[in-house]
Image (cartoon, rainbow, N blue to C red):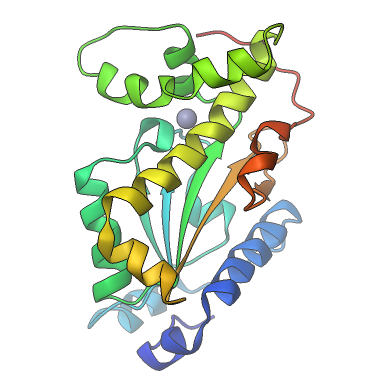
Length: 224
Ligand SMILES: [Zn+2]
């Protein structure tokens, strides 16, 4: 499979970019990975890159975006940080990816059994971790209010989904460049959840009212 040329990248619509990621994950979970010649891709990308997506995902070792979306060299900008939270550096990187290099979609990807989310729920304090956990903790009061009897596992799942939505809100409210590109239809910003037990990525409904209804079949107990 060849890497994208500038002309090919620019022909991709934001929705097509989302579909390309969905198809990549379908290949991944069916073990139908595209047979790539990475050395050839090194040659093809030596003079430049035209990635179609920016993926902001957790640093979790099980969630590598190039693997779970079956992408090659030069296909995606991969921004990784514990708990897929947003900060100024990540905003700047995303602005560069979309405004300067022409990526068509920003995907914020959360995942099941996220240690950063568990740490936020357990209020773990360690060194600089609070910069991350405090961002995730913004979601907890609303969920506990809506679901006073929620168990630990479901709380973890719902906080993870809401944290993805908060990150998307942060991008739109803090980056006028990216918010403007969304308004003009030049890019989409979408959220998704990766299930570490199945390898499947589930894209979140774009209507905020459905955000608390996300469920997975994972029954993993919560350990902070
Ligand atoms: Zn994580």
